[in-house]
Image (cartoon, rainbow, N blue to C red; front, side, top):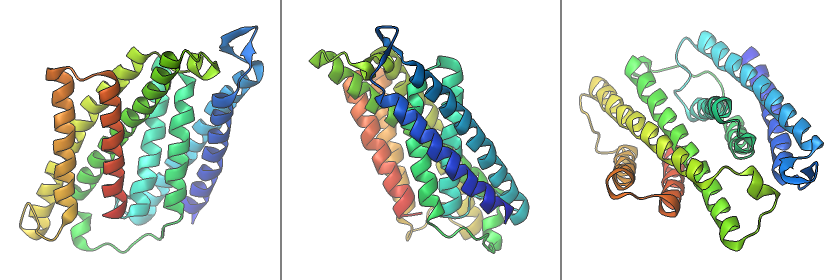
Length: 276
């Protein structure tokens, strides 16, 4: 199928994008004698990384569009489709953030996550399923899209948390190496963390609400007793509610916020993968 071809091409481009971004991450040569400036080779790797990632994003978009056309439904009904959409969405967010802030190093963290996600999706069955009529409800599509977009936002908070902890470690140890100069400031990373959670929490909330409406429409009940994913999703919602409350009213910032973002995203991925 044509969508499978575009999917495989996307894997190749995301792999190349990951390789170029990681090269830029570990390049230790300063340009023109200044450690804060990348070498000429690093500048070329940045341009190539953005180019091949953008090309991969286009082929990924085509793969999703063709699958939508061939299947006649929003391609989010199984784990393969959901992970593929997550990978597509996080690359989209990367380009949006990159366009605004011009922080190339973000791709060194986002692209490996997108590539590994797509690799895991490739390992799963990707046949277009014959859907049960209950799965064709619009509520299911709304629920899945909102939930995955919420997970993407939490992934950005997770990445910002990792970058924050790295930068803080460099500052405390006074190791001002090339990676230190490539990372954004602590204040900017903390802003990314907060904005990502502020954006992701409403999406998760709407995803849970739409999921409950779909369950009511399909099964006649907002909650089903034999579905552990619903209970764990609510637990995740309460966790991020506490994090958001702590950030807005108590003033949790910096290191604590970074740790909580990392812990929360690990929990979200566990629920997403093991109980999908």
